[in-house]
Length: 423
Image (cartoon, rainbow, N blue to C red):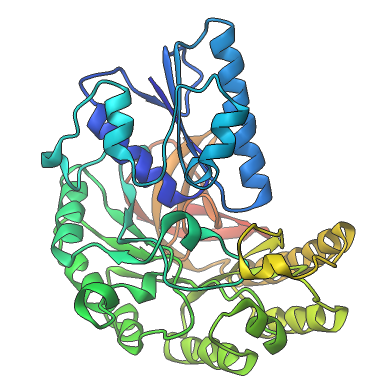
């Protein structure tokens, strides 16, 4: 069986849980070109490009089935959660469409019983020394551009005990770095405990033997918990790194986006983080081409990025999503303007990244080695998350993947550092 995962790291965790349930009943591969009788496609339905990629993958699998290369095609995940009726009508050759919470039904369609005793266990598909740890499902926010609450429902926190148990399982299997993920990390606990519990949760995870790095992803800015700042500052296992999607800085656009913070409060939070955590690597994402975005408002965003000098940055072009609040707005920024604004923002970030990287030359960092690639071992500092951030390329003939080394940086470019092992 080939399990194919599209979309975000939260989807990847869902696939890993599914694969653990299937273990023993099928020979399982993940995102593989190896021949398999069955393909399970875990789809993404977040934005236009992701939906198109998911549909293309389904159609490709259906064609393989027609040619006799596959016996069964199962589709699950966000796209089939949201568009199940349309997909069933248009692509009749698929053997089953399932939503994001239909794991027992997916297993039943594959003649496998759901095993309750496997709670918290997964077949990790990332390199064995790091793993994503999903602490909640869904989202209670009402951001005007986002369909995730329509797809995954309201925010549901896992209990602290359940998450710690999963962290212990991962650590026992060699995981050294945990990347905490959720649609809204800082909302964690409000539904279960009537208060934000992310700081306490991180401290509990940090106490798990074997875990050396904890990385925080997708921290919503509105209502950011003060006690989390202290945990990042004082707990040596918590990476000096924060992924905090801000989306824009124009107050008018932020209000239309229903983000819960205006431009002034957004800037205030970022400057507070910079002041209280002076070594913090800040990652953010922004949307360009939101309905009505003027050149002046885009310039505000450019000026803000220049002012803050984010360590890492991602940019999305706005795409209208059915049934969201912004879908009623005229998508009036032309595609070529959206592309131009994305290019200009990323060009600015590239220059910032290069300048920040140059400042690291001659300094030493703790580096976790992820893989060997050609003549280099490739690793990351605590300031970098897998797949989306900078990497450290080390010329050495005898390093252990999954181990930490002290590395001196000898040169830099915009998105990579080059170093040598000191110890």
